[in-house]
Image (cartoon, rainbow over all chains, first blue to last red; front, side, top):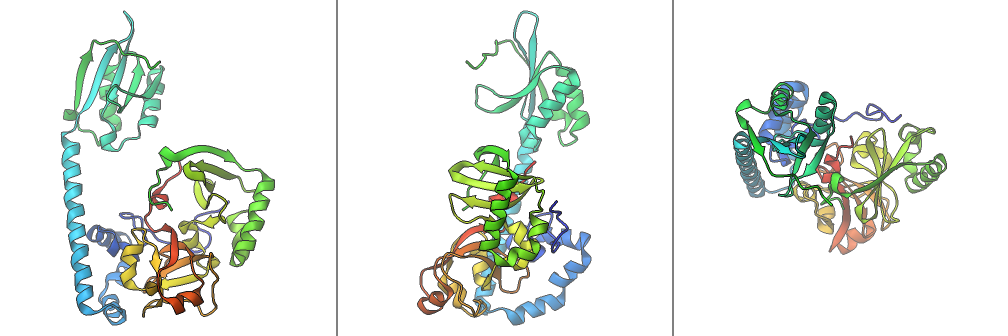
Length: 189
Length: 182
């Protein structure tokens, strides 16, 4: 079996998935540096320590002003990235997870959970987990708007709420909402 | 090549590969990359359960235990992935680019000849012919930056010094790098 440990073992930065020496090009440099300092202090010293910077200054083949320009560009890219991450966070906080109960027949209904992918939750495995938990059918389907939602056969709105809160601490309780959809869910022909 | 690559969307089939086919792949790899020989048993053991993943655009990925090891486009030679190259740095001949080019290579640009002939860049003394798979290293860095295929032999790159020198097949941080098979 080809183990990851065979051959040379390479350290990859957790933040940007590149080897730490390339972190400076990843627009996440500050976070990368922090991560490296916390987890691998020796590497950090090797790459960011004063010795390393002096070496780099001596070795670099780019002229001084070009280096400065490059550094400025990377700074801008980093700031843009951070702004983007902040915006995404805000979106996450304000987005809602909708739990709907839809009537299928006179006495049967299905529960649909919409909006979990914003929180980075894998829909397929969650659907399977819910179905297993309630001993019924569950899957990922596309709703009329074309987005994915988890559909569980049966009426479990409250139980699903409890489960989501328990299993996914990433989803705050205030973001989950109920809706009762009285429309008949059209099956895809 | 993997500039826009999404495993979820483009996967069209995943099959285990027969032992006879594995042997064929092994011999082709040894022919293509003679430096691979000492490591071939680590990478492709005899009883390998190699899985072949077919994707859109006639791209095939070869994986063992959910780790992508090689890829192939059409009938091009089977190429090791960058991850594999990091683990076994000497399986591919290397060229080096200078610091200014790193940024561009990291966004997938092909490497122009001047990037390979400027100070800070290194081309091997022995000439590498056209259409060879090479590892692209970077000035001042230990690990490979990308995998490419030479469009001109290194002698021509040194003399002509114009146009595309190396076509990039895979670079650090590209969608294939970020793909996780699970």
